[in-house]
Image (cartoon, rainbow, N blue to C red; front, side, top):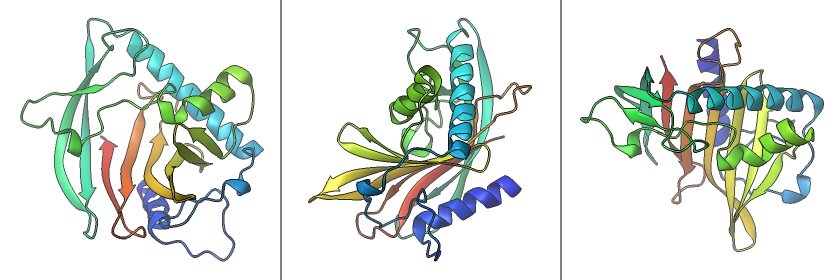
Length: 226
């Protein structure tokens, strides 16, 4: 319950956040990204990044080895459209097994043909080789270097926020007439309990985008592992 309240508070900051003392890692809807404010992760952020990247990598290794068998998971879900309010979706059953080729990003598969609309569920499993986190995890896990809070990713800039103990939020910014403006975002809560079978799994995730008609508004899908 406390974790849900924390994530909802973070989500609210995506929509409107007027703190007088601004957190330079906070990601706010409608706010231009100032690449000149970039910096290295501090020690606390780096420790969280290490823990998260290590857990994602460990889970990915485990999934890569799941040849010939699968695990099943249940998710609760909700959704919000631009200009609207959040509403609940039906729960979702998904199975997970090793990807077709070793080293590929694993994907959930619907346990029922009656609900396989990718608009209502994020099928890719978030692991350390996901393109939006790979550069950060490579620095943390393989190079022993501190990443920046802003890193380039193709035509985008990605801003990262490692906070709490097991939480990560990131936002992609796209160049719009010389200004880096918010494009889409994700918020993750990662299981960091090494004694849990769910170590490295995403327990709660918001996958969203900023609304073109109103950059202070967002749309998203939320999926929570039950």
